[in-house]
Amino acid sequence: MKYQEIASEITKKKTTLCVGLDTDVLKLPLHLQGRPEGVLEFNKKIIDATHDICVAYKINTAFYECLGAKGWEIMEETLAYIPSGIFTIADAKRGDIGNTSTMYARAFFDQLNFDAITVSPYMGSDSIKPFLEFKNKFTIVLALTSNAGSADFEQQKIGASDLYELVLNTSKTWGTHENMMYVVGATKAEALLKIREIVPKHFLLIPGVGAQGGSLDDVLKFGSVPDVTGLLVNSSRQILYASSGEDFAVQARLEASKFIGSNLTQKTNYTS
Image 1 (cartoon, helix red, strand yellow):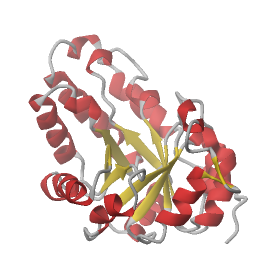
Image 2 (cartoon, helix red, strand yellow; image 1 turned 90 degrees about the horizontal axis):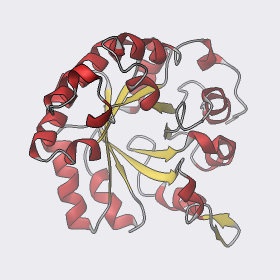
Image 3 (cartoon, one colour; image 1 turned 30 degrees about the vertical axis):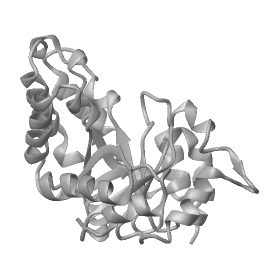
């Protein structure tokens, strides 16, 4: 999927919403618990309820890998069920030496046909570049994450800059905004202005809105790019577990609907 195609979907649907399919088998509604197949049924109903009001789905692979071979099958079937034209992200956080990264890229881009994958930049350029060799695919690099532990490394000073700034400044030379994105946590919205100075055109995948306390208004205000918005705002638990009853899909849609509307067109503090 191409950069402009994502931007067009955002304009058409008036939302930046990415629904996180981080489906926990232990948190399924009671009528779906007790069998791995319940995860697939749950996912399908969530997709049915939200596909017309979101622009992306993010599948956190850990929630499927923990179920063994059956979980991998469920992930494949979930991915296949997502309608065409919606951006798909493998939240796998891979990153290893070059030949291993090549195998990861082939697994998620060729075999599974995801549009994007999240990666860790810790091992440097040769661990990232194999992902960038795939046409019309995106590599989403962890930059400034929403967890408290991001202070341990990402926000440590390296000279005059924080480590995450060094990651941005260095890694942006490996690809372009047409094949790279960055993860920036919604709980770090105050850093978005600085981040936009470094990567003014790249899409940012923003986790942390909702259950983790991030503000959608702040993210849109400080992180948007004129004309294309440049954001994919992820919400997982707030949408998936809006209800624990048989009406879970109806309630999920109501939560997803909160991400639609005029706030996309608000004046931002970002200037190019």
